[in-house]
Length: 425
Image (cartoon, rainbow, N blue to C red):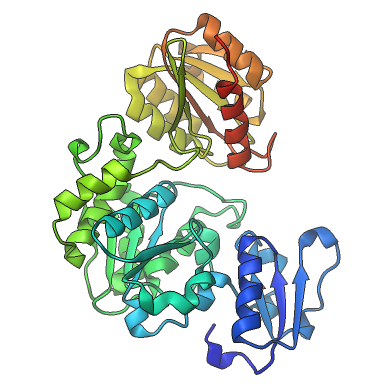
């Protein structure tokens, strides 16, 4: 929403009061001089009187069906307010990143590369600070790296000059009308409003049907062809780095292509240093510790079968044990996950912690060819692994949402890490 369309001393409703809600409150108090600010969270049970407000700033987690259609012209978000009010020189600094997996790692590495190259940048959006937090510092930055979820992109009306689209598989469909097409259309807003001379980057690993969607959707209107990238080489990263994983290298290929386009100086030297300095993000193929010849890795961010397959593909026959657990949101096909296990890690022990996805996994006929154990809880699972599994990598990559036991994937990953860190010889 353009600032010019907001009335003077507006009456404002903040729908959601998490990190972005608090950021939006601080910004409107400074920049809009509101006559009224009210905060609404669903837990209150009462529906707000929508007509009382000139502007509604929605937090990303608020699903569209929570707001009547007639109210939507007054709705915006923290990210939209920034994106849709950038000057052209400011928009030219913006790098937007989205995808079903790998957004945060790609955004953090991009920022690290800029920093290593002597450039000033900030990460905003879904990872980093809320977008409006950098409003007053825009002109002091060389680049802004925006990690954008489908929730944030749902109603975006302005696109950044540079857009990186990393990967795509069905996810968050409960939020997107149980429609993979609607989910894709939300992602598409990252580049749907680009202008002549703007750039879209995506890896050559995108499935053919997704590339077709790019061709038939907003991308076909583009006057500048998309740049299709290849995975960066393994020797661009330290030997023990989880960035060696193929899915990370595919995603970071878009960053290499972007850096070439931007003319980053001494690119290979700065890239190697950035990779050396890069600190992995928690819950994303995160090495916890080595204990009794077992290397424990926390990949709690893997909330779908497709995401779990990426870790299995990376580890291959090094995988000793895979731990699965989670809520079933109807997203993802366990057939491909079972096939990947049989091909890449046929000797691995598969520990299914009793949960809604257990029956779905066992419903795959080929699962009977795997070494399966069904366990009641996490503590019992670790006890079993230490007694019966062969030494190697133990991968906690649940393949399901966390909501059957935890509030979110981070809480789940922290719980798992605590168990492993408290193991005593």
